[in-house]
View 1 (cartoon, rainbow over the protein chains, first blue to last red):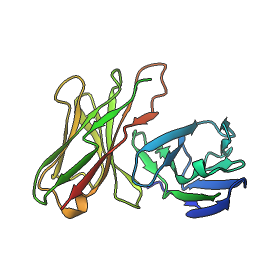
View 2: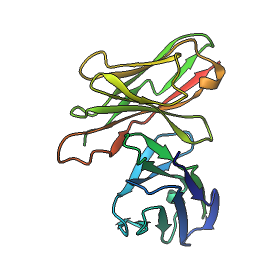
View 3: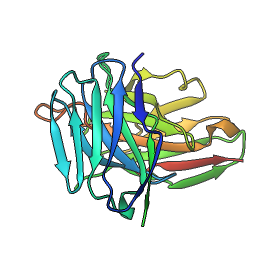
View 4: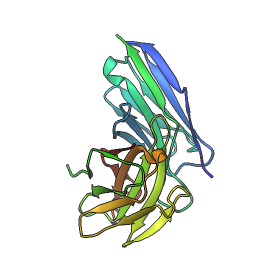
Length: 112
Length: 117
């Protein structure tokens, strides 16, 4: 079965620093989704990537999907305390079903 | 912007009781899903629903669980005889399935936190 691994599991950065979170799939991704979650709360959609080599940005967050469609990265530039939370990658499985699988999550803390 | 809504936001129930979690998907969406997240763990797929029947379910979704679309707007998850380990956040999601829309983009509700005591 397809698995998504995220790294690092947790990250503590000083405000203003850049950071990168990775999401690696055991199989080719059909669609890759990034979400942000406050601990114990709902999922906030950030970005969706579908094509190999695709890159999207929103404010200070940039997400990329590699050409082989097995790895995605989420990059935050000049981090702020408001970026703190848990970042999840989710993906369509390629088995012809519509269910999502999710990564283990990366807990980000930004120190002011 | 249309959104998926869920009620209640928090449900506390005693072990052995039945609970019904409610969701209102986006109105023209055709595919519906339930996921759960035990605190501190991964979001896990439970079930998908299309054309008034289950299209896929995970091994978690056993006879204790059932889903229903009782009318044109609601989508419910029933958990019978709740256990302590059912305590989790339950997320509902829907996706369009309409021609021209991204078929697999799922929109998630805010979740219902279920606490079984």
